[in-house]
Image (cartoon, rainbow, N blue to C red; front, side):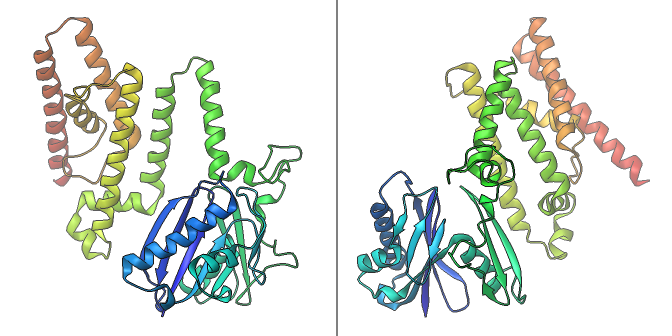
Length: 363
């Protein structure tokens, strides 16, 4: 028996086929295009159902039910979205429109508020499994909440229970998408945080602080917290120190490596974007010889050839030192090839110091 779950968000629409063991066996997603008419969004949701069925080789008639999680006030018995501040739904019969598009009975399509659906999913098959009461907070384009009491979703008399994102936390505060001012969503959603970050960056730019420096500060702050205060950060140090011991302790090292390489790719892309923005042009040779500076910065900043130690602020100190060395040699007019020799000697000295320190510590 298969079921389809659809997550309608302000940014993306995701759909997946779930089996009786609550395992997602196939999934797909597309951009929402929230500025379009509701009928077009509903048509895309139906098309996404067909896509996942086709990919898995399943007929739509083999699907027992389709569950739709939508932001806003969802009238589940009627199958309508009464109101959604981030989408063009106003008393829209979403369940019936999707059912008609797929040619299935309307009762096979169930509708629920997205946060309520997420809370119920966690209660049935996720983090809250085995509990009778739980609360879930969702952060995305908006801020939502789902409340489970005695193994039942708290819906409220007007289907609006759990809409914690629209609790006013500041009188006459920032304008929310619902039309009121000071809602929690206006400060804590991904949309609000992005807008506030952009505003602060513009303010700092007007004060003469380079935007590249702001980005560096953001990256340093985020990754310093990630590596020192999170479980994945501890896993990174553990794998770097002793991969075999880490694997034997029950940690999935493949996921750790995947996380590490994904973030390395992201940071390399960000560095490339900032370099191009600084140069106001793009050349395929802009990154040449940067690897020597990066490696040297890591070792000077406290990273070890044996792995397992080092900090993000330490690497920044190493990068500043390498920048001073590079700038000094450029001012002195030292030949480019000799500059590489000097940087190589600095790296060699840092590695030798690290190796000797390790030997002294092991005695």
